[in-house]
Length: 367
Image (tube, rainbow, N blue to C red; front, side, top):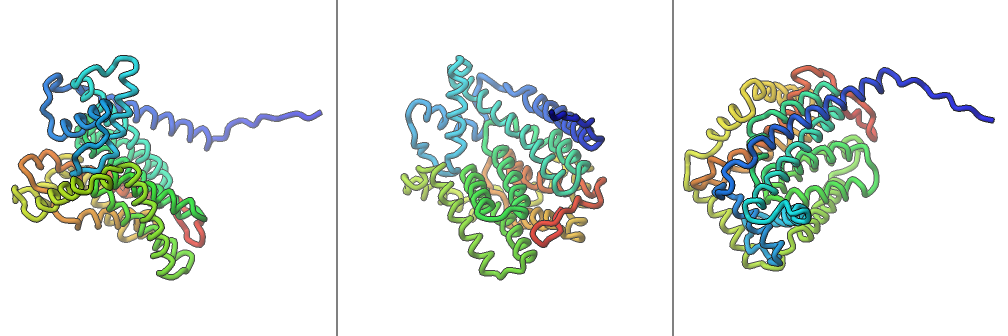
């Protein structure tokens, strides 16, 4: 006869439960902020870019699979159509206005999930306090809350970028093909949401260089691994946005439109000056200062997570000014949201957790 002795929960497990209970509370608070007033303006339909996304998603529901639009890739058109199809089953989506509301709710949900991913990334890289700080600040940051009310691609892209950077960091502890497949898949997903999501490759490349230094492998290994990740990313992009390949003339027009506005700005005042203002008031001055302190601390400390985040921030910062057009002032949150989440990952250590949690990862002491 055997007997089982059930051990009392340890204080560390109790602390974890309390921490996750707090994160659930933060998630619900974030969701409430993002759902509050989400039906603004309806049934009038006037929000920039929502007409493009929701219109194409409703078209897919009616059998028009080709969006005939390539200024953005098509993944979120398809995801929104699938979401609306689910909402239509119980009769929650019956017309255009309810379709707008449905896609806005999807954005609010994805924005709230970003809060949880921020916590997981911050906790894994820098400790529980940093993760909690990242979650809370993302939950209440003005730009992220505001854009989560819109049926557009910016919030899904922010989630994909933060998730991709986290997976790049976690990949340092993985062996074999799994890290290549995951990194390539998320790179393709981010790019298929919006073309500038392809800049996620910078954070992935930083992680691969950190891995190579830890394992003392050569540059050719890094290049080969990045090439495999790139191939998987392109394949994911094609599978999730197939009409970019099947309708090349439309894809060419969409890309030409983007480069035209990059080369011929129609609103010269919109650029990094305006973006800096959007960051200052969109995140909150105190959090901007904390983020800058975190960036400086990361540049001095140079842990693996620091390299990944700083490389992405630096690459995104030098990609050129936002596309200028008459209504681009409303879309400064596109780069600002990416800056905001990456900087807030780094702000946590500056505000509390001075030393990241360390664990050996294939020869590298990794946070």
